[in-house]
Length: 242
Image (cartoon, rainbow, N blue to C red):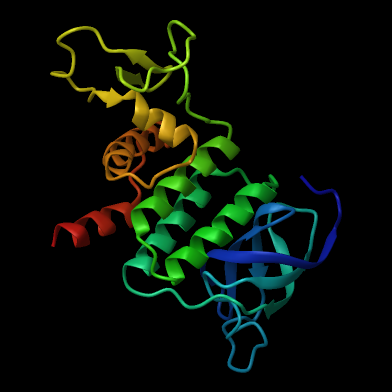
C-alpha cells in the first residue's frame, strides 16, 4: 500500500465505473505500481469535461490522483493509445477479466506482473486470438498473484512429481492425488497428469488441456470467490450456448 498522498503519471486501466452524485463518477482502476485503486472523478459526467471521453475500459491510461483515504481523487487521465478496441466475444471476455480482478484482488496491493499479464491478455483478445487459452492463462496468473496458486506439478499426498501418463483427482483445498482404480464416477473428474503438467507450464495449446482446464479453473475460482456468481461468466456461457 502506498503512503504517498499524490501519484503522478501512473499507467492504469479502468475496471469499473458508476455514477456518483449529479456529475461525477466513482471509478475502479487497476494500476501497475499501486494495484486496484478506487477514485472519484469529479465532474466527469459534465459536457466538456476533460475526463468524459477518456475514461474508457480496456485502454491504457496515464493517471494522476491524490488522497490518503480509501477513495482517492482523480485529477487527470490521458489516453496512452496502442490498444485496439475489443469487440464481440473479446469484449465480453474483457469484462470477465475485469470482474475477476475486482472480486479477487484487494485494494492498493501492487501486482506488476499481473498488470502486464492483463495488458497482454487484452492485446490478444483485441487481435481476435482464440479466447479460451487467453482466459485460462489469465485465470491461472491471477490465482498465483492473489496467493491462491494451485498445486499442479506434484501429488498432494505423496509429494512426488506427477506422472504424465497417470490419472488424478483434484482436491480443491489440497491439489492432485492419484486416482484409485475405478475412480471417476463421482463429482470429481479424472485429470491426466500431462494436462496438469501442461497447465503448470502455462501451455494451453492442446485441445485436451483446454477441455480439462476450463472445468478445473472454474471450480477453483468458484471456491476462492466463496461461491459468488460472476455475472460476466453467466452471460458468456449463455451466449456460447446459443
